[in-house]
Amino acid sequence: MLQVAQRMSRLGTETAFEVLAKAKALEAQGRQIVHLEVGEPDFPTPENIVEAGIRALKEGKTKYTPSAGIPELRAAIADHVSRTRGVPISPEQVVVTPGAKPIMFFSILALVEPGDEVLYPNPGFPIYESMIKYCGGTAVPYILREENNFRFDPEEFRSKVNNKTKLIILNSPQNPTGGILEPSDLATVAQVANQYDVFVLTDEIYNEVLYEGKFNSLLSIPGMVERTILLDGFSKSYAMTGWRLGYGVMPLDLVPHITRLETNSNSCVAGFTQYAGVEALTGPQNSVRKMVAAFKERRDTIVEGMNAIPGFRCLKPSGAFYAFPNTAGTGWDSRRLAEYLLNEAGVACLSGTSFGEAGEGYIRFSYANSLDNIKLALKRIREAVEKIED
Image (tube, rainbow, N blue to C red; front, side, top):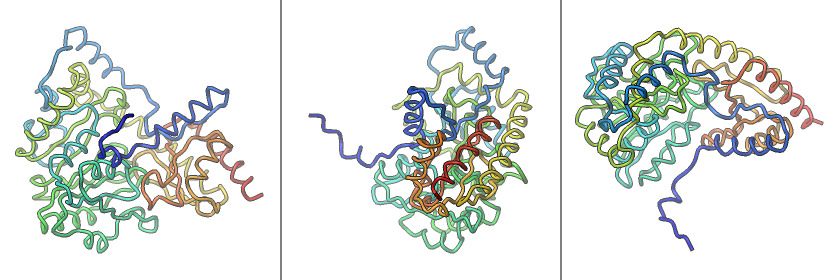
């Protein structure tokens, strides 16, 4: 009989893929499902990026690469981050990974000892809590509340930090709420991080998917480069989810440790993928702007539609591509409602509790789908919810 290591019991998962599997099973039975569960842009990877990847393959860029990434991509990332965050970054501060998730895992693994506390957002991306617990850390949630536009309460946040705190995780724009942290929020994080000598992992994977205003990064605050790990990548901004290309920017003395974890786990990122990444950062950016404009139109449509559904109340997200309506007015808990919408309405979505206990009473819908499908989903959801009232 198989007996896996006890640590496996501490490892969570990403519910989106479980719901996707259920939805695919229903489709195999002949059902038509509208997919609003997975956070994946429905746009193709821009042609210039695809061509760069193909060119690299034809040029024989199919061998091992340095574990921290090819020099060309590390330089392009350093230049990009320097320009967008307004702080000087050197290529030596960059580690390239197969997707951005390894930066979460490696950062926690490298910094957190058993018993150390790690603050993370709740509701929030479920892999944060999963990796904290898997690595033996103590997961300490800070709550993002609807009445505060899904930002944290500064005093409550400060009360969570103590001498056991080893790492703080931020995410803005945020999954699943679409909320953003304001400069005052970032100032609070910087103040407590400096006071308690704590590192911060700032997940900025959705920084390009912002609908109003200017993106604010913790990295831009004076003195925070020395204690911040920036997580970013190409999946969301350039519709490159399947290319598996992400990166971390961090203090120089942390780089060899993160690189060694990359060497031990993945060896390196595929070379042709990295050359495509160089083109993504240095080539035309029109495709990014067009994609964000399309997401904004979809956002406005889905938020208006959600607010017209009995028992639903939905804030307008400022970034990312998720609507996170309050569904408590339906009288059903989140998981039951999400399952009902899949089976009854043929709309795949995620229970708010997939993102932590504070997600109870909410459902996450990804609007990384066409306007026609979003409108169809809204019609189906409304009809299904009206049956609940009956």
